[in-house]
Amino acid sequence: MSHLHTVKELLGIEEDKPRYECDCMDCEFLGCYEKYDLYFCTADGPELVFRVPEGKVTWISMDGAPHSKQPYIREAYRLAVQQGFLS
Ligand SMILES: [Zn+2]
Image (cartoon, rainbow, N blue to C red):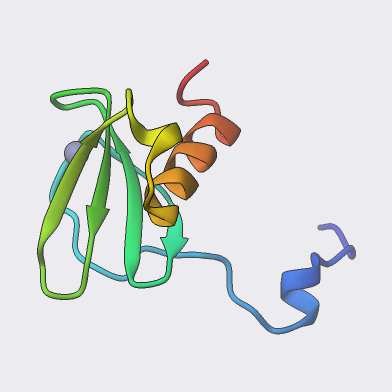
């Protein structure tokens, strides 16, 4: 076990975890941004998937994501790249 702690741990901030139910086997959780749970999904894609509290789900193709006007879409794209899903 490492005795090093991340800044988040020291500040008592929990790592991002999915907040809303996801019943898709092909969704990989990326992180949270504001009210959105961000996923990368290969079921019909690759696509970015956004889940919100009301149970609504939005799918966005990867193509326009880096240039989206919506910060949560750009953030999902950034996380997908960072976590190696696009390499
Ligand atoms: Zn999915």
